[in-house]
Amino acid sequence: MNAPETRPVLELAQVTRIHGAGGLAVHALREVSFETYAGELVAVMGPSGSGKSTLLTLAGGLDQPTSGRVLVEGTDLTAVGSAERAKLRRTSIGYVFQDFNLIPALTAGENVSLPLELDGVPTRAARAAASTALGELGIADLADRFPDEMSGGQQQRVAIARAVVGDRRLILADEPTGALDSVTGEDILRLLRARCDAGAAGVLVTHEPRHAAWADRVVFLRDGAVVDEAGEPMAAVRS
Image 1 (cartoon, rainbow, N blue to C red):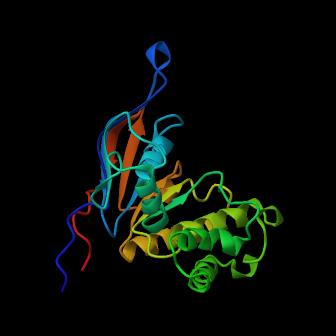
Image 2: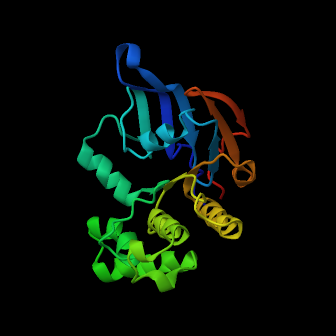
């Protein structure tokens, strides 16, 4: 039996993010400390403007904090260069954006396989993994369609397939069910839950309590600060 894993997959330590300067400065996050472990899905809730999406962009290495540290599997994203952060995003971090961020000139299958191919996975293997991910979301038949040939809900599922393809240790989802009907939304949450149960760490930004119910723990943000938390951190992976 393997020893339990006690290091968090994601850790934010006293993270502050300020946009602008002087009288125009906006404190998006204020000394936020946050962590999530392998096998755990954490929901982040709060009113609009509370800092939920900022937390996710920092966790995904898409932005840098004004102060504090962001660590993914022990790598401090604030201490490495852009190339190393990009590599982590390709190999370890899956990100579901609110606006999908699909590449218009690529088919669904190509969009999903792109992170793997950029990391050196042979095209055939990357496309096979993409097909599997699309199939998990019930849209294998869309592999050859371009984004403008799909509905918003279909594009959303392609974006989710791209986030979970391969061996992603950290999955970040910003309102991942926003463009989906309630039944499909539940299927997406079931998939995220299954990936976490299989050993990934997940962070789900949502404003829906029924979606947060899928999580092991709920963290509440207001005005850029953590104001409450429900549930205990999972300090070790299930074995």
